[in-house]
Image 1 (cartoon, protein in one colour):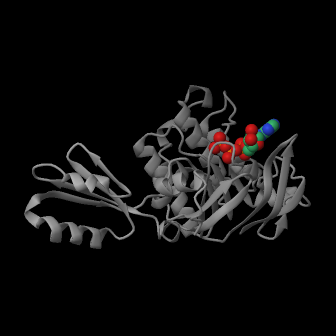
Image 2: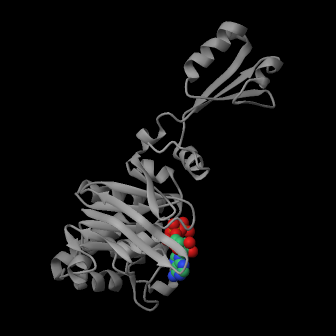
Image 3: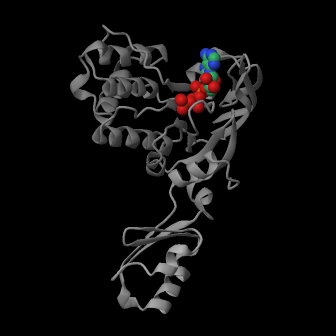
Amino acid sequence: MLSSEGLEKHYGDVRALDGFDLTVAPGEVVGLIGHNGAGKTTFLEVAAGLQRADAGRVTVCGVDVRREPRRARALLGVAPQEVALYPRVTVREHLTLFGRLHGLRSARLRREITALAQEMMLADLLDRPAATLSGGQRRRVQTAVALVHRPPVLLLDEPTVGADPVTRDALLAAVRQRAADGAAVCYTTHYLPELERLGASIAMVAGGRVIARNSGDRLLAGLPSELRVRFTGGVPARLGELPATTVDDTELRISTVTPGPELAALVAEYGADRLSSVVIRPPTLDDLYRRLALGGDHVG
Ligand SMILES: Nc1ncnc2c1ncn2[C@@H]1O[C@H](COP(=O)(O)OP(=O)(O)OP(=O)(O)O)[C@@H](O)[C@H]1O
């Protein structure tokens, strides 16, 4: 498992990390979300031993990353945000090199590479040098490099940037499988539906610390749904003046935590025949993100 306590990292006046606490359990995927500059990448870099914190500590399966960097490194799979591959080295050679560095040998290494190539849709690319790959393909190779030795902790920084929908699905499935096999996964993204697909819990980062930490469902509880109603003959004028209500063309939109009773009240007042369509859109992680980014106090 991965654990950080009280991490601080300053760049001059910028407090990139300011009391960053986070625990990721075996088998858990935690999605780190937050605005640009919130501190997500800095945290992953410190956890990976690529940056030194000014204070606090990170442990990987109980091993202190700062005191025992080599032991910690062996327990980690890291896919950094900036792709770092050797341009003239093929995909297969990358996987072989990093597998060997982590102690995998001949038959087992070949088995892992074959399985990973299938899983990550890299089979047709194995003999291509990194320089000949597209941006999305390189990033996928970078993630495969992080997975090849089956580490118990994965640190993945926006691994799906540039991925098309099909390869994105393959990558998400591979990450999900690693978690199912017991890995603790820390995953950053700005594409929040991915986290729902990964069954991730959410750690919302702002100002260099985790300000909300819970399952997506728990964090969404209490956020309003949007009730959208169309009326035959147009929206009654009175309704457009209610609070938390907008009228868009012929559609009434009500932001409410009780969409059912609101709908029942409309039916009672105007009759079901006047409502030509009804949609209830439940809150999404994007709504949560906006709420927290705007300084709302809903932190789950
Ligand atoms: N090498 C550096 N020198 C100076 N400031 C830095 C450096 N690296 C990061 N920062 C600053 O630290 C803060 C946190 O940056 P970080 O890259 O961790 O954010 P992030 O949450 O990963 O953002 P993004 O979503 O854009 O990837 C930002 O204000 C950034 O400008």
